Length: 145
Image 1 (cartoon, rainbow, N blue to C red):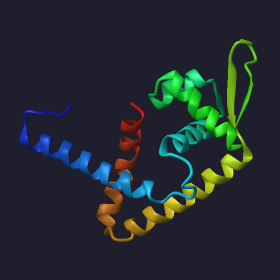
Image 2: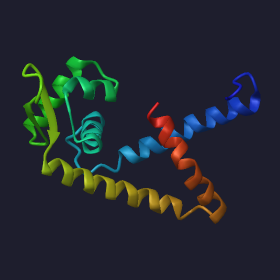
Image 3: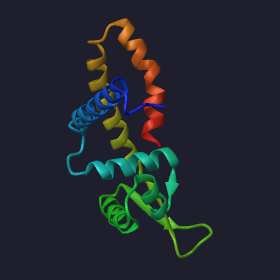
Image 4: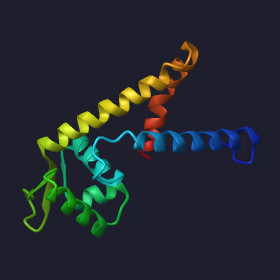
């Protein structure tokens, strides 16, 4: 557990925050479809991982309010990137699924961003690359807390 009253821990947390934010900004510029917002792309990515979800479930996973998610889903549906289907158990609800068009766009986006990261990683030495590989699961855990 970090001790944020201790100088080294404060410096590490500050450095991590700064690096993650800077890298995130650079990755956001590696988009394949400029018409989609980062939030819309994130929703498509979430659907790619979970397969299908109600708008309420997506709102919780994306940390947005349900009315906001309803608007996002409507925009994605209008663009042909998601489908709304009846909920199998609750007829009052809808289930959101991604379309093949969305999956193709996500694959292209992932490939572009992976290529960008690969060019950055080429600048690391073996020891730095080994440390980054070891840190990747920890960063993934932090991203999902």
